[in-house]
Image 1 (tube, helix red, strand yellow):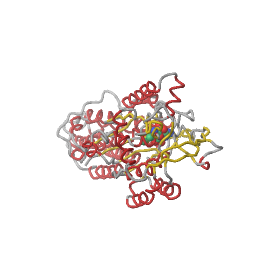
Image 2 (cartoon, protein in one colour; image 1 turned 30 degrees about the vertical axis):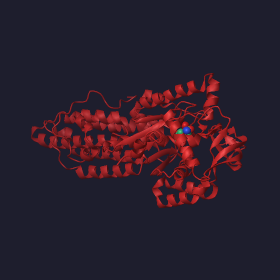
Image 3 (cartoon, rainbow, N blue to C red; image 1 turned 180 degrees about the vertical axis):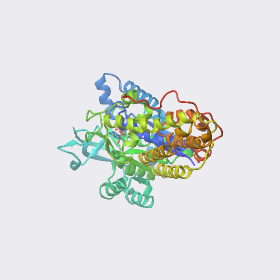
Image 4 (tube, protein in one colour; image 1 turned 90 degrees about the horizontal axis):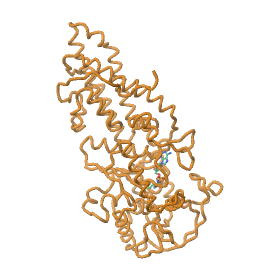
Length: 500
Ligand code: MSP
């Protein structure tokens, strides 16, 4: 039982935008969820630094490439820290642990008969994507993602005989339907492998930046071939075999839908070539768009997640991005939607419920935990776990908010505020509030992977902060609280309103 979860490693020719934050939040939520149950977890992210576009970007900023990637990578790390990302490692492909692993991998595959060979490549290359295109993929000769003319390249390269693994890949996908999710992406990959999978060019000649091909300094390893290996070099491939055995294969690669072919065709073919186990799952999420256009630097509509955090706070931004679109689909981003969800779901929904429950519970002498809402809450928790296990992240949040509404309804129905002043009804009052405190405790656990600071604040407000040290397996059950608590009258609200 262990869980290695990864994000793509990001190109450092620009700072992070909300699309990148989205993937990283998702992986963070899943890592936190696993840790909640005590599962040994390795959450890996990092930066993809051997790209030719860094050479261009460094040139434009008048600094050396090394200096440039150092600065930019530090900026990415800092951003993740500021966004509460709980990664266990941050790999940079310019690190020596990575280079050593890449070299070992190259040598291993080259030692096999006829898997790496030299040939001439003629094709259209987009430096933005670091990928070759077919004429038919381009729009007016331009890469559709970067709107930039693809260069005609004719050069001598090393090739990786990916075509040899066509049948093995298709067989693996058929036997393991969970390998590529969601299903629409699986179909896309199957069709790509069946109709278009060719050998990959895996080196570029005469580049001054990147990892040289072992034994041939005139060639540099193609950046995708190098980058994919980060998932293994981070956990010790080539430098610490013991650790590598402990963690590999990865449980889950979270990737955007644009890089699925690299992850579901090239990457597993590379692993098969080296006789290494394949990751259990690749899950492709969709894109955040603004007015229908993908958020990206090249479109010019990138939004810095730190700007949103300044106004709304980290947890609200985490919540919004993961709640707004079903994980796997595309969706439009707008500040108006963020503000609306902040008001309705956080200030009025979560914030108000906690405020109401703690204000009243602070006036109860005891807080016995009955069972009036136990079955309903327990059902929600099991639906929540089901959603988490299928990476239906926005659904898990929906279920959590349904649980809150169930509490609101119970409070409306029982109107404990009417009982509070009548000594004859003190017991009934305490019982209602005892149940509501227990429900809030469980809701805190549901909120925890998504909004860790909010969950901690909630548990503290209801006097159950020690719950944070427990395992979810034990604590996430109705009535599994650790005993009598003192609820404090809230001093501040969890999500203050901007207007009112
Ligand atoms: N360096 C490669 C990945 C190598 S992994 C071995 C790369 N980097 S990237 O910085 O261009 O993109 C990283 C991820 O961000 C991709 O998964 C991409 O889909 C995602 N996103 C970029 N823009 C996005 C949105 N607007 N919305 C959601 N995710 C998007 O590709």
